[in-house]
Length: 529
Image 1: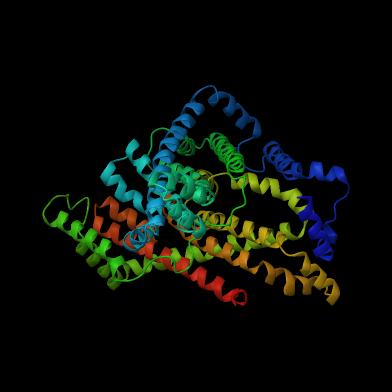
Image 2: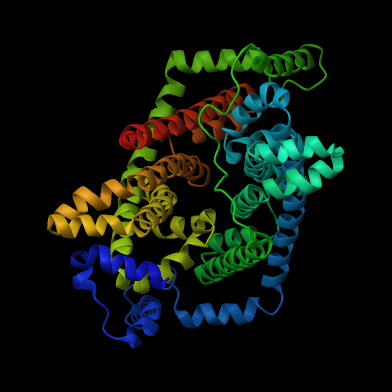
């Protein structure tokens, strides 16, 4: 940490001069500044009645609720949620490890299976929930299936990269030694894939915890998510505050614990993997064999009555609904409204994330002051904010905009801050030699140097803004939007329309990901030889 700070001082002294630290005591007390200020404002607002207690409960009331519910009920609901999370992680990580190892070790599997897996992964977990509800009901099996879907995707893709990118010399050594299959897996593939696999598990922890809260908010009679819904319905925001705090603590403990495990397991240098390289998905007619077979079985199951058509519409019915919805404009209008929310939330949340990340990256003092508080807020799963946002902003467009902005905020903040912090000290020497002022350093050195990280964060923010839009329309019913249209079709048991909307959501998500990648490539094309 001291090396990073000294490098910033050497690089960007003029930029951080207004933020210079005032002694060693500041470094110790700074992280507590924002929490203390928030606590003072909260207590003042309560005593001076700036806001109603139904909107902003007093700290004493939250503490009283902690004592009341902490005697047993709160922990029982949390224990139920953690048990669900544990079983979902075990099933999802195990399945993802096996599937990722198979896909990474077999070129034939990459050609035949990987394109279909990637296409299905483009559909967000939330978009699968209406279909899962009809297949599995609203009991424990639904929670397990949702968790497995959320966890298996990142684990599979990261494991695939680790296995596929194992050093060729190690493979040659294994072939020379004629290692049997089990030793090849234990001595070569597993250690080589471990860094990427652990990166996937870290991401799976976050997505699994978030997805569990989402499904508990939608369909559950117990668990920490249900307790939040119950508190919101009774306007007991003190209980909602308490649950948000507990969810953040659980997220922080999981992140810290996994970081410790990662440091213990990864004690050797390893290349950075964990991102699917461009062009990594096989193309050609062979990649169409599995989708064609699945569609044929799906159509046969519907035609011969193997599955109730009210539960699983045929591919032809889905295609007709998709065509009819685009032709009459209903799907197009719903998609337009959803994309408007995505863009507005991206501009608000992504813009704020970029500005805050720029400030934290350039100013060590600001990082010490605001960094710990922002890190604590980041540990709170996204959907945990839904009951509080709906209580404060209602169910209108304001609440949806804030939710989407919150989803887009942290990816760009983290990417911008890390991109600036990792700049080379040689840029500082060039700035001094050229006698560049503050604005010139920022425009000519800082932003171009951090551009790869910033645009990678923008790509993530774009995807998260789209996912946030789907979630906002799920939890805050409105008159328009693709997820709202899906909910209406589900209530009418029009599964052809539900699945048509799912296809459209997946296509838009894939297109937005490609758009972000194109923007990143064009903005940083100077990196290529």
